[in-house]
Length: 223
Image: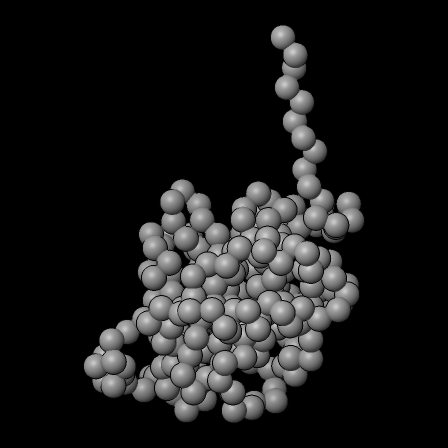
C-alpha cells in the first residue's frame, strides 16, 4: 500500500521568514498583541498588504485586518473579514475566526474598545453586538448600525493581497458596497443614551493625535 504524502503547505507568495513569523503568532491573541505594538497611521495614508505591514511597521484599521486575516490563513483558518457600518462615523473592519464553534475577532483601532474579541460568541450577530457600547464618535454618540456578511479574502487572491506593493483600495471599496444587516430596530436607535463619560475616556486611552472629526463610510479610517 502506497504511503500518503502530505502536500506542502501553500506559501501564498510569502517568503520563508514572513511565513514563519505569521505562524508564530498563535494563538490568535498573539496576532492582536503584534498589531498593538505597531505604529498607528492616523493619516490613513495607505492600504497596505500584510507584507508591507511587516516591513513598514505601521498600520491602521483596514490593513490591520488584512494582516490578521493573512496570519490566520497561514495558521489554517479561512481569511475572513467583517465590515461594521456606522452612522455619523467611519466603518470598522474585523478579521474574524472560529474556534470550537464560536466566533472571535482581531482588529487594530485607535479606540481601545474596538480590538480583540475572544472566540466565545455563538453567532456573528453576538460578536458584532459585543462592539456596540465601545463604538462611538467624538460627540459621545453610539454609532454602530449594520454589519456585513463575512467576506473570504481568497476572492482577491488575483490581486496578491498578501504581498502586493501597491495599495489595496479594491478591498475596502468592495466592503463598503456589499449589503449590510441592520443591527437594531429604528425605535431602539431613537432611544439610545449618550456614552457615559468614563466609558468615553476609557475608549480614548492611547488614542493618537490629531483628533479629527470622523467621516462616514471609509473602512480604512475607523480606528
